[in-house]
Length: 175
Image (cartoon, rainbow, N blue to C red; front, side, top):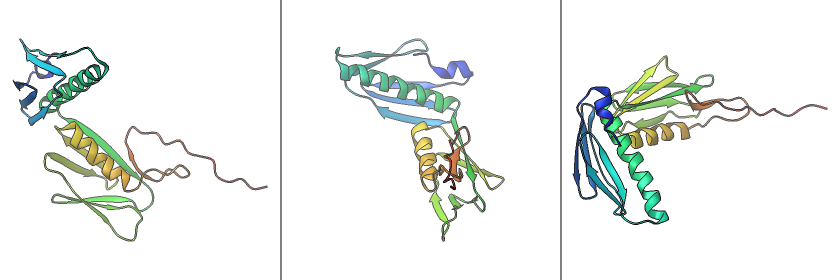
């Protein structure tokens, strides 16, 4: 796998210690321990992952480790972004310090603590933009926000990803 940092023109350094990988870049630093079924080595602008044995589990762990390391390199060099939209009358979001307050039609506001390492912006009270260098943390926080009011299939109200399409069901019909 090529280091994505060189493609973006930003320096990315990778330190490999056995099965432990540490990636540093302009956006931050990430570290992770991969499975013992995968061996890591570093060359000229490359990170090479090889299976230690030829088994199905080793093949699965190889693909997982490759994707995780690739996401780490991309995250510290370019970062990741997710956009959520609030669809519904009276649904809105507000940002106060490190707390995100959501009004989602409940009798109480939903207050979420923003994890360290993520930047959240609220645009026009109905669009939430989340940015960060850790793809796993970013995706989990976006899923937590969406889980507070997932889109319902009849009117389409709820919290959805900006690129998500909600297929609406047809309601009851009269005689």
